[in-house]
Amino acid sequence: MIELAIKHEAAIQELFLKHAFDEKFKFYWSYSWRVKYTAPDTTWERMEYAVLEDSKVVGLLGYSIERDTLNVTSFSAINFTGSSIAFSKAMMKVIDDLFMVFKFNKLRFNVQVGNPIEQSYDRIVERFGGNICGLWKADTRLIDGTVTDCKWYEIMREDYIERVNE
Image 1 (tube, rainbow, N blue to C red):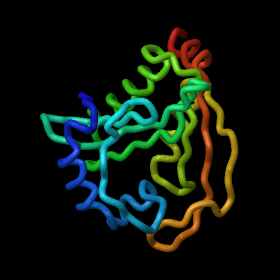
Image 2: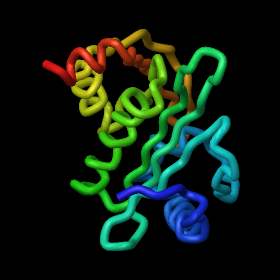
Image 3: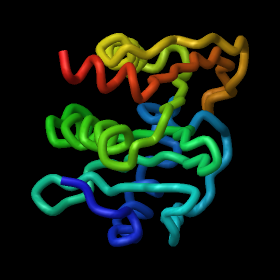
Image 4: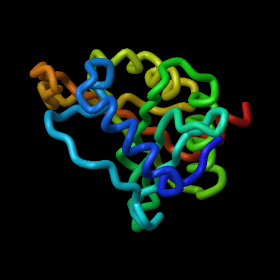
């Protein structure tokens, strides 16, 4: 289940503090500094959802909105519990809502090369007719000092709808 993150801001803040320098999440942070998590108080430029399982926050999903082009960028996903069917279902619901409910034109997102979720993102993009758009070399410095490449993806609404209807 998903709900607006602002309803669960305190719980998300606790999870962010707990995992701020956890090696397991080094790809999510993808920078060496931290700020206190604050949920957006408007849905005009950014949407963020708390992912709930048994009424407990297990993850966070979010994206930025370019209203002029109806494109979605900076899609982010963090699963604090590891493997979770609830988290996967929530992520697929958010992606489906982007195209089917809100009718956005395009979803753009990226992943740091080497992130264990990279192969899953490759499969999602292939499943929904998206593209791997490119690779930015030596683009991101992780908290352990490693510099990684950044892989960019996009999924277009018409391709998503075509694949879903197959």
